[in-house]
Image (cartoon, rainbow, N blue to C red; front, side, top):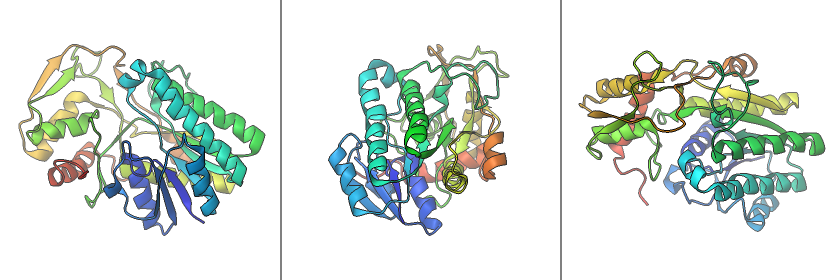
Length: 328
């Protein structure tokens, strides 16, 4: 029975599809290609559709005996969500409501949901635990937390078991360099730094160097996208075997500052990479680092590519061979 990957043409979704195929799983990709790329899909049956369109979802479930769902389909730009909250709730919450309703209709009982560390908002303590207070500071995080609550009540009412995976900064690219990260516009730190190395940007801006951290710049938790993919597969196995819904943080377990990421990128690429300090951005916490102890203990998740050098090396391998990303 196939696994349905919603948003399977996106950055993380495409890496999940690749790992599922490597594990001999039958895969169905459902994506509207608003953000994703067909060239990122390495196999499986592909449906062009939107979670907000019940008819296109119904077609997928009617034509396939789906075993489980992994859901990445969402808008994910924090700043954009602040300016367009209704659009974010319509897509991220409304679309997922349709998905859960269709799962209920066809008796599909398992879903792994791509959530976010943005559900926590400003953390009260570091590292962040799963039982920490959830108080999002933007509509993106609020939309993901809302879906988590919908999943909780859907479990109680319909017996749909879920794993909500809250992760921090996905980074890197498939180790063999076949697929990687191509956002338009790009908003993630490591690809932007590598664009400077590729001479596609003049410099990287460092937003604030006066934080209460070791070198004054923000510290973030980066986790390799392939390690993330493996965690999703392990989480699905866990809820299917145990029949219990779960929430897990997925992170590296340690943080890296903006200056560390820039300096490591210089070492990996051999390029100068000019950096310029700019004023702080509103709402940027000084440190965001996850505790992934629960995922390690309960899932047996053991990240293999968690050094900053490896993360950047795999990203650089992708970007230097695909300087313009996937061809449209």
